[in-house]
Length: 201
Image (tube, rainbow, N blue to C red):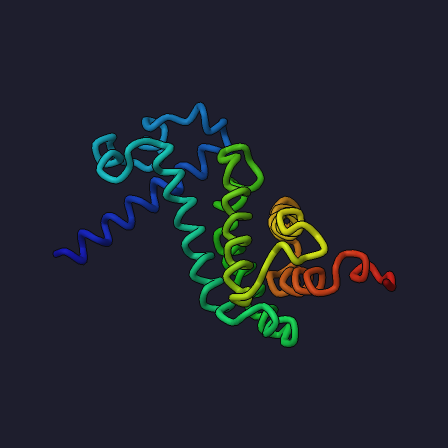
């Protein structure tokens, strides 16, 4: 009985999420109401409020689900320190492939959060996650103050590049497969944009 109830909850939440994805294609998020969500999901308002406080709570939980999955992926695939990956790009490629496959799987949601104005702060949350993972992958004696480039500028460049690549891929309709995008990400990360364009430095 409990399993059936859990499946019902999962089905209901999925219906509400799908309703939001459809509605934001028709109108601004600011104009989407709980009544709209309930009508699309074919549930009553009481059922909606059993699971979410309001539409903002719904959006926040969708965001957190994505971020939690990405964090788990990073922790699993990037468990070693950074110097390990510099010498073994195949490990970075494996991670990047899984990353883009996940974005591909949840493309509608990522498009809503990264391309539309539904959640202006989500790109920054994603950047913070990437920054945190970069710091975690450093040696314990890592000292940002010893870098030739201010650490905050380095992280602003790197995280913006990663998020920007995702945005471009989504905006183009994911014309390239996740595996190709993984190669692009790893190449630019390890070579830098100038060398990736064929110039010698």
